[in-house]
Image (cartoon, rainbow, N blue to C red; front, side, top):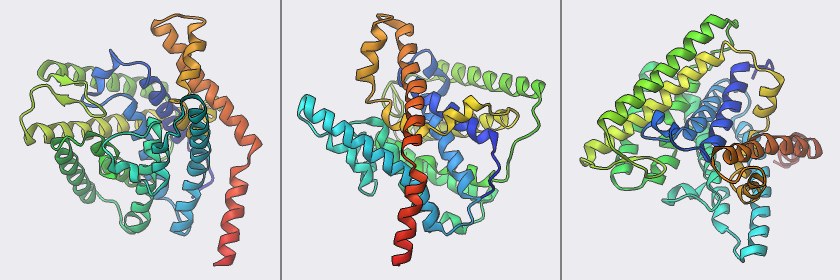
Length: 348
């Protein structure tokens, strides 16, 4: 892969992580803009797009690519999971064993629920996306025709799972993210564009207009139940409504991701954006368990309301990013990753 930095990728990672953290602690009125999913899920869509974009440009041996990408996720994921289990055992006498399922071949996606630490679900899906690329997608040239086929598969499979009541499976399975992954691969040749203030204003305005129109249409014509992780209709009409919900999910992912890509291509990533972009793994995995620590701290300043939530978000996004930066300086995971690969490669 080219060594040159691509600013819009850093923007997608930083904003994607912010959406996930903010989305966990600020609900309405923002939820209405992404019906029938939640705004934080756009953050996951941004990350999957970045995965597809990067994987399509890989020239290294495919199993080495899988190893390189899994290593930091597993290293920090297992470390944080062990810490959570130790603390949980000490405090409430439970090991929270479901948090280990994503590291066992990602079998957590077969359960119609999240692990105890909800954010670790993505580690299982992350593994499956990498395996899908290594075994199949790397051999294919992504075209418009193939994008349509991928979209149809995603749409139908998700719709059938929603109809069966398997909302968590519909969300966690790789099929939920196929279009965004394929879109990233299809647009893998996209790079930064010259910064232009007027262009940024126009794109941002169009994006806001789309969000407003989408919210108006969805809330005017449909009544959604606050089911999770995908909203359902309060008066469903069988398979037709399930397929309609599935179609809406794909549209929300695709259209908003495209707006984000086109917008951030015209923005230079500052040092602050790069800082947040390179510290996403630890923030993603650790920010939910940290709530029990962050909430009492926030209450020292603001008892309740949006002020309290803002402090919690600051602790989890800024504070955890700073902690992640420190940990990465203390532990050189890249060096460790290369050392282990070289040892096993020589043995093989």
